Amino acid sequence: MAANDFEATRVHEGDNIDYTPSGAAVSAGEVLMVGTLLCVAARDIADGELGTLQTEGAFRIKKETGSVSFALGDPVYWDAADNELNDDNVGNPKGGIALEAAGTSDATVLVKINR
Picture 1: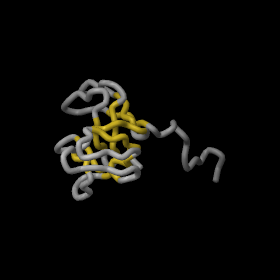
Picture 2: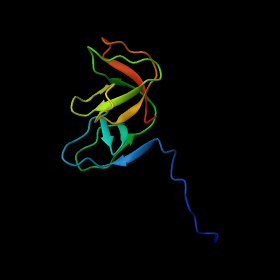
Picture 3: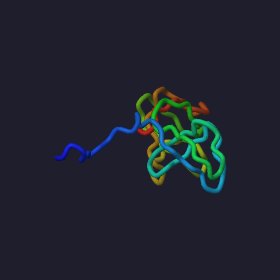
């Protein structure tokens, strides 16, 4: 391989991506699916403006209440229709793993996203 024929060049840590919303602004803390990545907006992003979405880390995220509970290490899935996590892997992409137990009455769960 020649000296300048790189197969890869490190750009950054990989814990965020650039994102430009189209059609609506995004609020800080808003959860979005970008392809198969569960992302969290780092700051408010105006419609059509470049911003940053976080793709790694531990986040406290809204979960379905009533019948959904998680044990430490359980997979969690993102329900885009209801904007919350649940345990239904049919039609809902995996968002990460629970970093704590959460009962049926808990409104949120601590999640390591994209794991």
